[in-house]
Amino acid sequence: MTEGQFHIYTGDGKGKTTAAIGLALRAAGAGWRVYMGQFIKDMCYGEVKLLRALPGVTVALFGTGDGCLIDGPPKPQDYACARKGLQCVKEAMTNGQYELVIADEINVAWLMGLISTEDWMDVARVRPPSVELVFTGRGLPPGGEQLADLVTDMREVKHYYATKGLTSRTGIEC
Image (tube, rainbow, N blue to C red; front, top):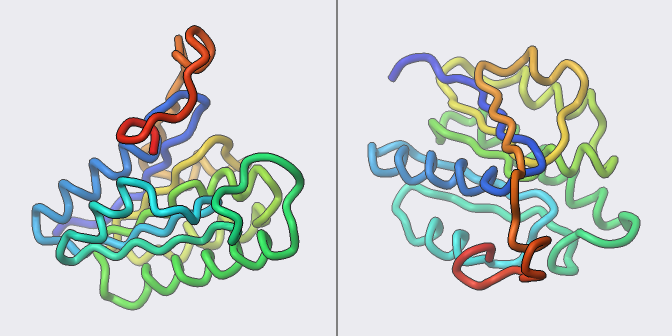
């Protein structure tokens, strides 16, 4: 394997987690061991069920205990879940067990103030050269782009949430 890279998938458009999952599937298909920690979410969405069924793939959820942190101010347990997530992602990156580590929605955890800019940066900085690292979610701390090797900004042009009033659909968004 060549040296790992640091990816960031951000922006207001749809597809950040989906892109990371596509990479996880490709890596698992090539025999890589994959770790995906989902911040904010702690419900077992369709992608979690599928990924957990694949050999060599570990999915951990660092949500809130309430399903998904979307509305309202964060509660003390939300901060605790985010801190646990940071520790687990660092451990997965540095324990030699995984070639690909995904911190899904870590940018949202930062945007909501659940983790500090320094904590976000620290996770990126401790990445061993052999590990491919992916951060997803809306928002990006100042200086984050400079640490990354690849930054993709998903831009919403049109969305059926707004044009048709559709909500999350099983099999598509969850």
